[in-house]
Amino acid sequence: MFNKNVKYFTTGEFAKICKVNKQTLIYYDQIGLLSPIMKDNKDYRYYSIAQYEFFSVIELLKAVGMSLKEIQKYMAEKSPENFLDLMHQQKEIVTKKRRELEMIEGIIDVKIDLTQEALHLDFDSITIEHLPEATLYLSRNIEDSTEEQFVKAVSDFIDELDRSQLDTGYPIGGITRREQVLAGNYDNYSYLYIEQPHPQEGHPYFEAIEGDFIVGYHVGTSATLGESYKRLFKVMSEKGFELGQYVYEEYIYDAVIKNREEEYVTKIMMEIKKGC
Image: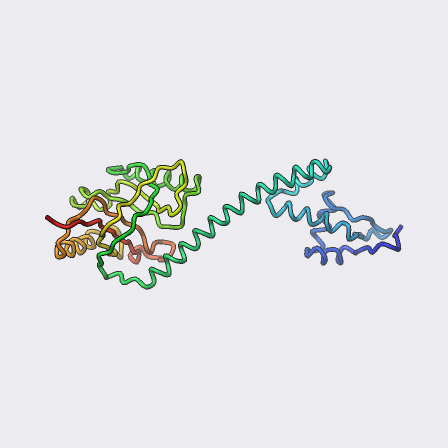
């Protein structure tokens, strides 16, 4: 029998309060997760405002990734102690997710900044720039690797970035030793790298040498990469410089931004020193 001093809500009214459709409440009733406080002789369901908090906890647990089966299991063993344990567990999950979201936000911010910067670049220009020291996370040595070995090295490197949360949003680049570049082996990279503005302890890092670089851009596929290097070497010679220890390459525009490989843009940074 209804208590005349208590306000009861129909399924539709309670669904509106909970901001869900009626079918959600009916399903929760069917699986025994949240049943109406009472049903009348016509089988109409009625809920009380006190059940709103119950519904809110269900939605909270769903929001942090618990399945309905897991929530049902808890509901079958309800107690203040179990509830506290559950809340502490879920807080740890939320804290972890917040850190992950903060990392994702940082990656997005970097990609926005890099893309906005790229929009104002002259890809025909060749400049001499003083680049500050940068901390890079490196792959294992991949120089002279076969195609199969190179593919595996790339895969392993990306897996490590994901596993150790080292992805910073900066492009993955390649480091080529002076000897390989002078021999015309422009894509015989020694290492893959990604910049790490905030290095984590426990990982091997390489500090890119601070100094002067000739910076240019290659538009197109790797098949024509040599033509861009020839342009850079010509300017280097005219300015009285020699090639330094390393050359760094990284994509400015890749498959994320351009559909055709012929439109990809690679930034080439050649370490230089004054000629004898």
